[in-house]
Length: 113
Picture 1: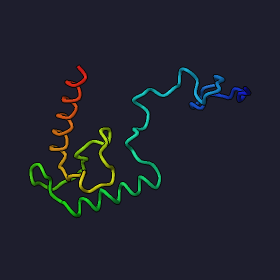
Picture 2: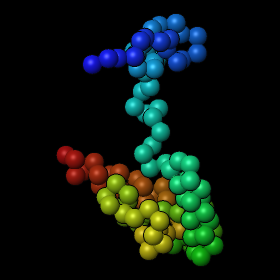
Picture 3: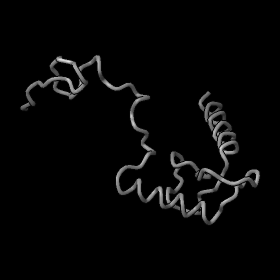
């Protein structure tokens, strides 16, 4: 099966030859990858519009009643929650969103054990 000829690593200043775009030294680390939950292109514009519309519909935090800054998925996308469903989203302030995220992460770690 034919393969592409080696080219220079795409990292700035690197002269190593590779067939994968980046040499072994400059491969991206797993935490540097874009989250699969971050939409791109048209989907990103739809996501921004959806969040703005949700915050207009529900301007206060469901947890404490203060002005909301974030839109949170009640059922996480990783567990089958719908991305653009107003029934699966809630407005939260930063503190309440952080509290909910920490609780979800702790529960996930307990299930993993």
